Length: 186
Image (cartoon, rainbow, N blue to C red):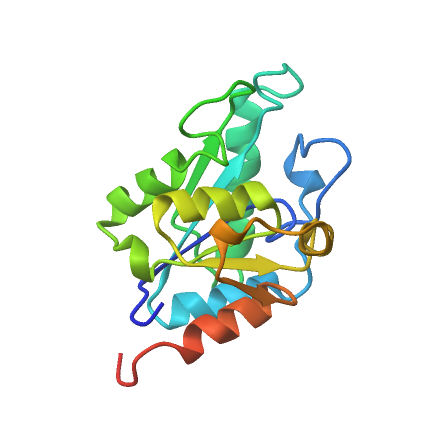
């Protein structure tokens, strides 16, 4: 991950608290403790942040694409108010297998292309096996956070092919590891 100028991450369980029901409005957004400060550290270091999230509730008719866009705009605004910039939010709203629906790597590849980033030095942070599989298929280093469904994912076992996976307590710890790998003077 040396020299990473982009960090990709999942939304639910990494940035915001997982809900039993989907987040249908900005009022449903609750940051996991330490998230704004962790993203602010990336922003301050000149590292771009993008979110790649599965949101099949749109295809299921639970929320509209407009509602989802409103939630993401509010998410970005709330973070920006704390100096934490999320430059891009990509979502797959599919409920059927597609290249963009994680574990497919489509969203990650789209983000990499958007930033002209090198997958080999662009970590993906997630809390589920689908996140790690998508990152593997895209060629990105993988970080599992133990927030959200992360502990369940860790205890459930991971296929050998997704290894190595860095395990971090939360987004703050993951960011600490990423920044520790940055070359000095950047």
